[in-house]
Length: 104
Image 1 (cartoon, rainbow, N blue to C red):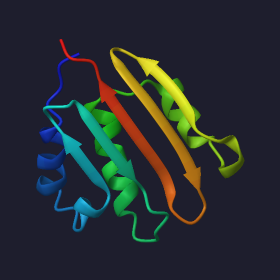
Image 2: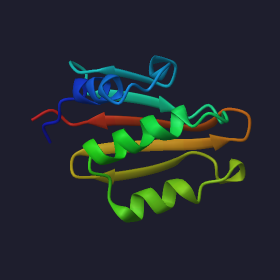
Image 3: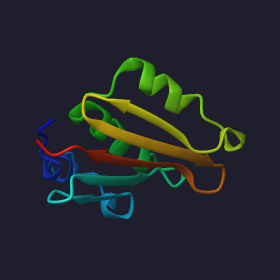
Image 4: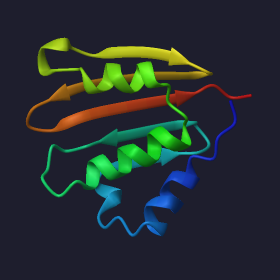
């Protein structure tokens, strides 16, 4: 899968999502992305997550699985379209998501 992870950062800037760098880190060369929603009230983490889901074209079953994860679920893993995805949820820090994209 070929994806420009830097596009996610660009869109965060385009949509003027203030403070987005506190929520996301990308390494284009390594093909990795890390995201936290930080369980805050202003919605910034959720806005960044929505951009990530759209650009990486997460499937609806994956989105549902992430939405249904609770603190007692532990770390969940998913593989689709050349991406290894893992996440866990904690009530104090929100959803933590890691994506590794296979090189082509």
